Image (tube, rainbow, N blue to C red; front, side, top):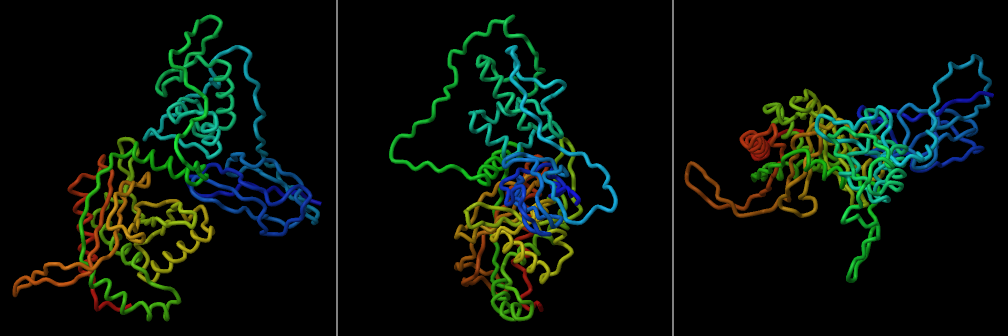
Length: 443
């Protein structure tokens, strides 16, 4: 008999840990090769972890809701085959035991730990840490002051639980500012005055006829991501409109032939992405991010497309290297990712690496919108509903009024590096690409 380690899989370049949502198997259960053993979640997407061997689940090393580093051993599977060679020993990550609250009433401060200050002032928090903070009434500003002992200074479950324990034993301590050095002073030597207005832990009472709905995990992550984006980037939004009559007529003419030939439907989204890619090549600064006082211009053009889920939440799958795909390739990528998102089949890598985002607010009937930047990108473009309107047409023979398919476009951009002139110029270039669409184009 041999024991095979099941490890937390790598889920993308920027993802360092994942939260265990649910175990589908318990110790003693039989598992087949590639059978789902557990569900995990990151700040990007939920995923299933399959078994890497057939056998019996011998041991589970982490509980549900535990946050586990990538590459850590999470379970062991006993296989029927005898091991011909002894496998090399692998380091086993085990959860840290709960540390008892110190008898000396001092603020919690792990030895050598410092509050990390990232280049853009943003710290990552796992869903478990955010849930504990919400249950204990810890605000985001207070959470920022908690020193972290995890990877890259992240706050772990142990860190926040020890902080909660020390806060309960010393309620008079005020949170330290993130930029201040923390001084550990024995409480019996310093008299701490009681604050005049101590925060109340009593539950909020809502008046009137209301329904209270608890946010699900994804909605909490979206809310946190949106608030942090507004705090990180000074948003500016520019607007324009485009006459997309040629594009609409071409799609109406070609959509049956396209579906028959390619086996998939062509929507407006790949046509919009195609125009965006052409303009990014002309204005590459739009395809960048900010790292402190450095501008990181991305050579890869990876277009994210905001997609609505059945739950009402949004997710942004990414079309990698969109500039290397023709219209057929873009269409198939768009449709495959959209279907995977709606059916909960997205992989973690499908939502990482985006350099620019497109959101179609017109899908829900909106004429225009003011989208929030998907960090760490510096711009996001929204397209509105296509509506027929009477429009003045200028010709060499004079002006006339005609019924045209019109669409508003809006783009929010990070004013730290994208000035109004560049933002408006890029947006106008995209509108011109759509407006000058070749209606005689072949598939």
